[in-house]
Amino acid sequence: MFKSLVLSVLFLTVEGFRVMNDVDSKGVTYSPNYPDNYDNNMNVDSSIEVAPNSYIHLTFLDFNTEDPYDYLNIIDANTGVSIVNFTGSLTGTTYDLNVSRVTFRFVSDLTTTYRGYAIRFESILDGMTYEPDNTCPNETHSDSFGIISSPNWPLNYPDNIACSYLLTAPADRVISLEFLAFDTEPEYDYVCVYDGSDKTAPLLGVFSGVEAIPILNTTGPNMFIYFSSDLVSNYSGFSALYLVRSDQDNSRHGVVPSFLQTIGYQKTTTSPRSSTTGIKPLASKVRNGFDASIRCK
Ligand SMILES: *[C@@H]1O[C@H](CO)[C@@H](O)[C@H](O)[C@H]1NC(C)=O
Ligand SMILES: *[C@@H]1O[C@H](CO)[C@@H](O)[C@H](O)[C@H]1NC(C)=O
Ligand SMILES: *[C@@H]1O[C@H](CO)[C@@H](O)[C@H](O)[C@H]1NC(C)=O
Ligand SMILES: *[C@@H]1O[C@H](CO)[C@@H](O)[C@H](O)[C@H]1NC(C)=O
Ligand SMILES: *[C@@H]1O[C@H](CO)[C@@H](O)[C@H](O)[C@H]1NC(C)=O
Image (cartoon, rainbow, N blue to C red):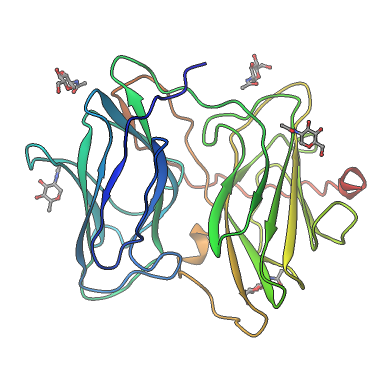
């Protein structure tokens, strides 16, 4: 399994963008204000630079802009030439940029704003192919927001795994979880979400198959998420945005059109220096009546 070697990742930040420093060749870059909506009339640059003998692999953990008026223009920072533009609903897209330095130019028009994007970037040595981690974490997150995703997402998760994600917040806070994409083997591969820090807490829900899932909210400062797959058949899995907020805060962070709250994905190839930008909306929302809550105990 190839893990990218990292020499350096440099962020040149501008107003409106999250300042990040990352020494291990990967990170997540966000649109201005994320997870709240971006503003109208923006034209904001940020940069990603990896080692000169490397290129940049992108995974769109979340991507929603007003198509075609609000868009992300990715520019080769060495030549100033635009490489590609992205607009619309593209969660689940992966893309290899054949350069080591790029400018992300986010442009919005005078009306209508969406949540924007959360894009993971990874540095890949020239000549190497992107390979997913294929590992199943037991992760703990204590940021004020972030994205969790199943192993390898949007590529298929491994068979026979059990992963967990513990989200923790300050004592006076609550946590909400919004699935951005969801597709598991119906009935056999499932996600349990608990209102607390482990499996003894009350269940907020158990999900399997292809589902439109409401935003889930805890009553306290912890959320525990458990994902399990059986011995056969693997699917894309899930990507989900978590947000820490106060009990009184009922505002909807980052407005996206309701029909896009859970969208499908198109399985992507991993050939180097190629791109897949396709994404398809859910063909149907399958609610299979499966009650797997027994397996969440
Ligand atoms: C991206 O959009 C900008 C602004 O319209 C345009 O100048 C640029 O050529 C586009 N890039 C590509 C690769 O089409
Ligand atoms: C990638 O970039 C290198 C040099 O910068 C070039 O030789 C090669 O043709 C490019 N490959 C693709 C697929 O664009
Ligand atoms: C994660 O926790 C589960 C039990 O909840 C355990 O079976 C599994 O081995 C753990 N995985 C790792 C990578 O530690
Ligand atoms: C997915 O399932 C196929 C067929 O069961 C298996 O060959 C493959 O190794 C699985 N992929 C992963 C990532 O586990
Ligand atoms: C969680 O909170 C959000 C925001 O207040 C609300 O829209 C949503 O309906 C809540 N979810 C459930 C399952 O009640």
